[in-house]
Length: 320
Ligand SMILES: [Zn+2]
Image (cartoon, rainbow, N blue to C red; front, side, top):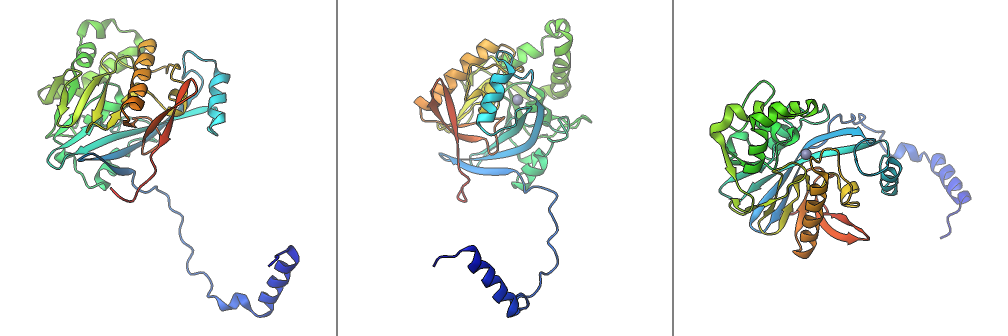
């Protein structure tokens, strides 16, 4: 049947002539508009392990000044090519809960209540996923930036994971806990040193240092991934998932252009070398990857794309 505009108009006239509108009951009460998002957690299986990604909101910052070794127009072009904003960059936060059926391990902790107003949803999402902070056996920390450690201790001083052993990279601990280095740090770095002390000083008894290369907890192997910070660490989880942590920030920029260095990378050249090594490893070893700073649920696979790479996000699945 060929439906043209005249047919449609004639049809509409016929409907009103027969009282079509009266056939259906009028709408019931208007559905109120929601003011909150659904809980931000997502479960997936890695071998025998169950991984749950927990969202801690996001931080938005100006694009200008974010990448230290590229001109702004070049960065804007890469974002506009992906239909993304070109004035700001959105940096989401995603931690992982790893459950082997016996022990509960947390990989990084989010911002606690110390982050941007658009973050701080971690605990709500963690509880919505069915967990409580008391259940956590081990917290594994990738590095000591506030968005990864502040969830260990609230601003008021409360310890959040009272029953957990807190595993930290030994090189990271040595760097940030060095009194001489802290005293000599430039003014811009002093708050980061002070924050590390604020978080860890009252809980030294809970902290255990680990070396890169070891199996930190069952099924979670630490890989040295220095550059972003001196002791920054990535992980292979269950032999099948590579947790990149901050070896790349948002993939739209740093997977696409692995040579770009974020302002947060303490040693830009080392961070770039680490990033390339890990992305190549993901391809060679056919590892799924997870990010700390990618769109939720922040997991996917890596493919080569020209001079860079591309992240192919995992599709939401109703099956765990
Ligand atoms: Zn981070």
